[in-house]
View 1 (cartoon, rainbow, N blue to C red):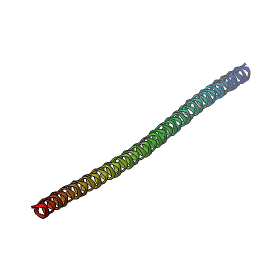
View 2: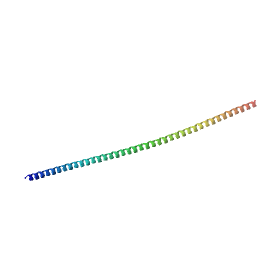
View 3: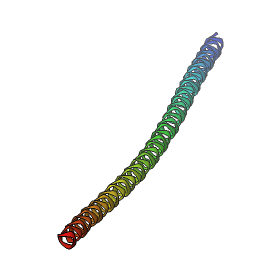
Length: 143
């Protein structure tokens, strides 16, 4: 009977130890599973974070390119405006030179005409003097 009791006791202890080992194994397994799940979740979060960073970087790059294109377009427009302004000024200066040239020509023509008129007036006066002197001389002769 004692032998049986010892055997029973031994079996019970073995069973208990087996149960404890099984329990521990399950706990270890659960811990391992939990750890794996946490790692996967962490990995997912990291992937999500990286994707967002990439997207933000792409958006920044896109915005930078747009800004650059806008800036280039603005510069080009400014350069074109400067060219138009330079052409306009050049044309204005040419017109002013042309106006000045014509004015000078007109002034020279007017001066030439005045001089011609003065010359003609002098000739007429001279002819009148000569005529008067001739008539005077004729009168003197008659007397």
